[in-house]
Image (cartoon, rainbow, N blue to C red; front, side, top):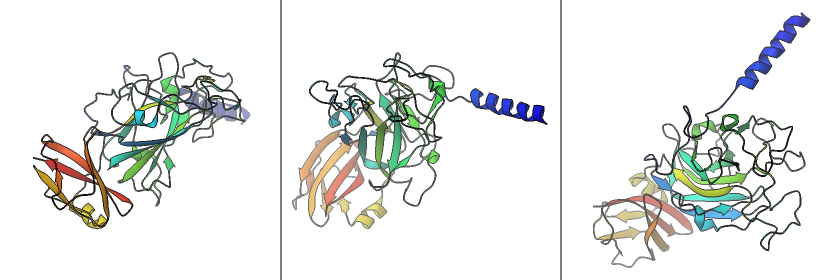
Length: 323
């Protein structure tokens, strides 16, 4: 009986140690996504950040005049990948918003870009929200050893990481909304906010961060620089919600004509502003309020845009076609 039990335990250890996830970019089976991948239909249009410490175990450490990460500004995380970064610091967070919600479609729905690798990786948890209040984390898993600290320029292997942004360095780490357990407070068809939470990487239980299975996540640490922590470049959208007439009716906002060629008119109470973005997430024109003459869109090239309408302290995003 004892030998049988030992065999079962050995088999369980073997299966656990054999578990792996998709490998590094460029290797067969990798799910890494390049910034120019044709699947991207939009990018984040808004960003806020709460910086973390340069060194969470030594909060008094000051670099470049601050004990918090200070490299980059929130605007650097808006729009497509361009090499401009926003550093989060140890356990810092960033919240990204989108002109049109992300939806749970076929395959991956979004991807997060960081600038790490090949000599170091800085990781982050990713969370989704459909109301900007309740956030739900993609189940993350780290199989990296936790006996020895990775070090400032250590490099966790991609095959040991799942649903952790940054596992592919300069390439995008993709995420599928189907991976998040269903919850009545999360509408996966209408994701409006994505939160990025820096993984500290310290294996000391006093400062460590843990994956969804209770494992300490060991990664590049410490990083005593003003650019410490996860360096967010961009969040790309693969599956985007298609807005139609019903969306106007629910919000009591009407934009017409649509398609348009010269001018658009908006029916809305207490209209404050309208911003129009192209499908890459770039702001192309904006106007505070709308007169009886509407808004001039004659300078826009033919194509699909997103009109972000602010009224009654609410923001409504509508697909606008210019013909």
